[in-house]
Amino acid sequence: MGDSTNPEPSDNLSSLTAPDGESPRPRGRGRPRKNWTASSTPTHEETTLSSALTTSGSTGQSSQRSNLNIDEVELLLHFAQFTAYSLIDNKPSNGPMLRFWSHSLPRIGLTHHFVLHLAYALAAYHLACHATIDSPENLKYSRMAKHHASLGLSQLTSALSRIDPYNCGAVYIAATLVCYCTFAAGPTGPGDLLVCNLDATHDAGWLPLIYGVRLIREKFDDGVLFSGLMKPFGPDKSQPESEPSLSETLRARCHREGFERLDWEEPLRNLREFVASQTFENSEICLRELDGLILIYEATYGDRDAKFEGSSVNEFAFGWLYRLDKPFINCFQQRNATALVILAYYAVLLRTVEHLWFMDGWADHLLATVRNLVGDDYIVWLQWPTESLRQKM
Image (cartoon, rainbow, N blue to C red; front, side, top):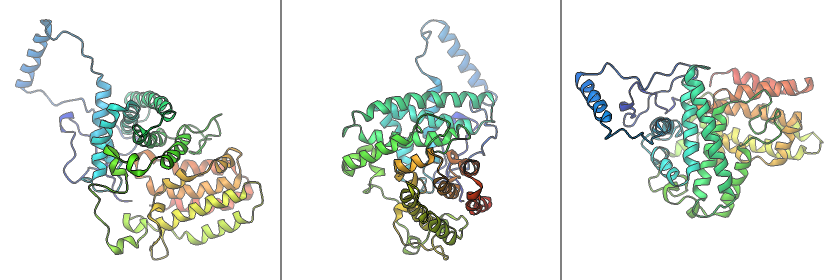
C-alpha cells in the first residue's frame, strides 16, 4: 500500500502542524508514543516568565481555578492536526476533505455536541494506538475514548429520533465517526464479526446507525444534507479534487494505489457457483450479498490487466458493509457457514485498507473467527482467503 497521510506526533505541542503539502508517516501500532507534553530544557527567559506567572497567581488576581478541560483540549488539538490527516486516505493533503476534517468538523461539533464527543473519542483511540499496549498512556486514552464514544452515541441516538434539515448533516457525519470508533476499538472478543457480535445479546453499536444513515439519504436531498460545512461530502464540491486522467479512470484501485493485484476471478467464480447451489432458507440473500462483494473485487483488482471501467461507487471496501441487509446479518448470528465464508472473502478486501490505522488487525481477526466457526466441510473454501492474506499488500 502507499504511504499513509497521517502525520507522526511531534515532541512539542507548539510544533504540532503538518508541513504544507505533505504528512509524515505514523508510528506503528504498539510502539511507545513520545511524551508530547515534555519540553526541552527551559531557557532563562522561559524560567523568568514561569516565575512571574507563579508570582502573579499567588496574588489572587489569577487564583481562580480554570474551567478548561485540558484533556479535551488535547484531544481536539490532536484531532485537528493529526487524526484529520489519517482520515483523508489518498486524497490531496491540501484538498477540501482535509479542511473538512481539520476545520469544519470541529465547528459542526460546537453546535452538535455529539459530533464533538465522537471526534474526541476517535482522537483518543488514535493516541492510544501510538502508546505501548497496556502502558499507562494506552489505558488512559482508551478509557477517554470509551467515555466520549458512549456520550456521543447516546446523544446521537437521541438526535436520530428528531432528525430534521438542521441536524441531518451532523447526524450523517456522526454516524461515520461511530463506525471509525468501532473499528479503532478493535475486536471485543472471539465472537466479534464486525457486523455483529456472537458473544453479545445485541447488534454491533454502529450497525443500526448505518440503517439510519440510509434513511437520511432517502429523506433529504443532497442539497440539504450536504450544505454548508458538509459540502465536501456532496456531489458538487466548491473546491473539487483534481480530475484523474482518462487512463487512470480505466484502472482498478490496486493499480492507482500501488498494492499487489490478486487473481480473484476464478476463486470468486467458484464460490459463487457453490453459493448458488445452496438451498437453505436465506441462500438467495447470501448470493445477492456475494454478488455485491464481487463488484467490490472488480473495482479493487480489475481484470488481468488491472483495468476497470465500472461504477466508482464500488471502489470503496466499506461500501459493502454499508449496503448489507438485515437478513444477511441474521445469517451470521445463526452461524450460517455459507454467510461466514463470504465474510472471510471480504476480509481480503479489508487488508487493502489496513494502512488506515483504525482498521489494523481486522482482516486477520475475521478470518480466524470464521475458521473457528465453520465445520470441516467448509475449510476448503477458506484456503484462498488465507493464502491471499499472507501476501504482502
